[in-house]
Length: 379
Image 1: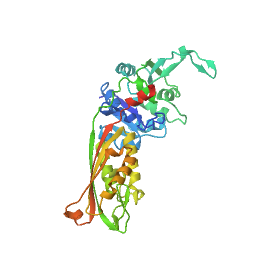
Image 2: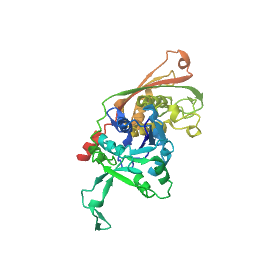
Image 3: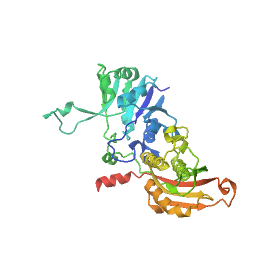
Image 4: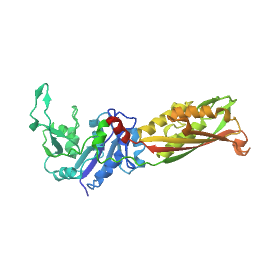
């Protein structure tokens, strides 16, 4: 059995990565970056456990991709690492950053081979440029550029992080205890993704595959007398509205389910449950905007949507163009990629009895093509 646990840190907000997509959710081929990094490390060593540290939002989805141990991050790298270490029982722990996406195999081998030599094994690069500090030059022969992953004796690292002092990496925390640090040769290819310009320095990233992902949504709401009716984001002239916890916009609800289905991110009830008072009377247009933002941050672009509204009443045709315009704006799409169809139930069933409305929705998504960001940076 392995005596090393792998911790991959990725709970940051990507604030310096100037994009609507979180960098850990950029797709390389058909895998989000965080998953590609984890699977790469798994090919290098039979770890006792793989721990992914991320935001609570991301952890809702990550188990759909792989069966790792997931830990919600803290307010800082140090806090996140401390929480992850509570899940570690092995003698050693290898800690890396998801953003350090292209760590070479031989670099990891050097780190693991040196595990007996000190409390913390650290890959480092020599400084090649002239360095100044407080307007005075430094001896660059004495300066090292520190990288991750870093291998530590687990109990020593746990002890070192109990300090009130803030540390930027594992080695500095362990060094503060007076423990020995051992350096091995790092690698420039283990570059950390921080800004858009870094994308061009990560040779292991592949362009996302050009694939259409399709989702289907269905929603049904009965009528409620005296309640305003909103359908497809548009106010409808009607004496009845929809019985629902929110405003009951059955078209938008079906559309949200279709979008989430295409992304493999669950369903509307997981995000906006009708048991939560926060969504009582909620404007469904706001819920759709939130869904679009979530899809974008997790690496998706919307291709097109198609809705079919089944209703005897109200008459939909007078409102179809306005619905297209409203939904296109919310989805950030041109109107021709938002289609609205309407039909009756030929007087059959509850729709035919004029008791409510059913909406079917289909949506397609594509992986966000981050290679365009590189072109924009160089143009």
